[in-house]
Length: 174
Ligand code: AMP
Image (cartoon, rainbow, N blue to C red; front, side, top):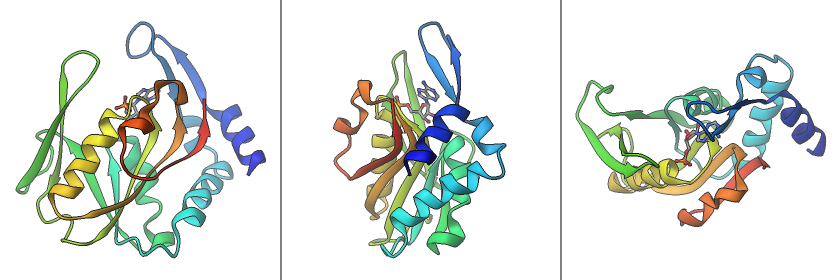
């Protein structure tokens, strides 16, 4: 586990001032491109949530899609995308939330989660927690029970987990 954190930290690429000045962007694409490391990361998520009766994995656009979809077989749970506004073709439920500048909207299909289903929310990175909190809201609006939110990377200094009233796990914390 310590080895995994070391290897992931060494693989993630820091991009200063992207997408805007002052943000240090954690680029996980080198982890995804590593055929040995990426499966070890997936295994960390799988070991944590296997046997917890997860029915649906919700991945947050867009890097949450990559992680979440890759966990379907290991967790025996179907995948649901939480998408940016205007992308989903069927009837949707929406939630808007504040960003540093302006606001954003996330949507899911109204039939993506059935009442009482146990849901794991997955994304690559937890920053301020606004995106994850909005996704928790969406799942609850459809009657789902959020078992946990889980991330590859957590920016601990932004205190995102304080905004989440569900269990939070992350492979590594900066
Ligand atoms: P937040 O709502 O502030 O927790 O932001 C989380 C979302 O923004 C996630 O989907 C992340 O992929 C993305 N994000 C925020 N900050 C960063 C960062 N420093 N590096 C990479 N992705 C980030």
